[in-house]
Length: 181
Ligand code: HQG
Image 1: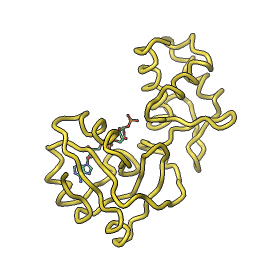
Image 2 (image 1 turned 30 degrees about the horizontal axis):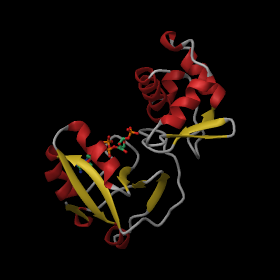
Image 3 (image 1 turned 120 degrees about the horizontal axis):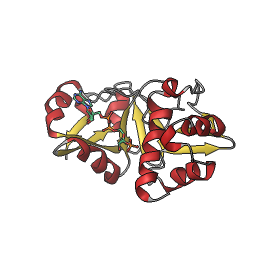
Image 4 (image 1 turned 60 degrees about the horizontal axis):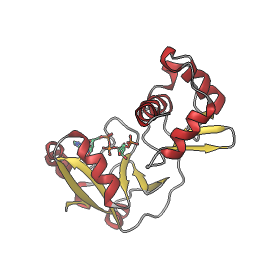
């Protein structure tokens, strides 16, 4: 796969494993959000544009993803994070004292008032380093970087979950635990 095709296939797999599996006849495991690689492959091949895809192409997308969006375990595959519908359950975990969330200027006033909400996803996404937060926040306008004080969030009763590869998740982050960098 060349880079453009790899990116485009990665987007299709994200759609299938994070957002609308039912649209592709995929049923995800309710606990971990996985399906068998065969199921995913069959669903991809059913798209006329992608009829030529084989398992190695999926493996390439999984291994080349800088963010390690997907995880393959034995004969199964899942998105590590980012789900909009099927809620994947994670074990609670203890985050570093500071996490980063990149957003855009237009969202700032609302975030500073209401805190961070999952919006169209199942969880708020934060990262351990600034790199992925900058990438996330730069997608929709002028970047604003927020620092999340995880200790203060925990004291307000927030549970943190680890999605893997520096990505942390929570149901909500109170405004009082967010500060602009
Ligand atoms: C904002 C990508 C107004 C929030 C990324 C964000 C990430 C609020 C947007 C992952 C708000 C939601 C997730 C509030 C939050 N008022 N706006 N109260 N609370 N927001 O895409 O974190 O490449 O659902 O700041 O890199 O941007 O797909 O979340 O701007 O890791 O693998 O509402 O998705 O990863 O946007 O991105 P998103 P996100 P992938």
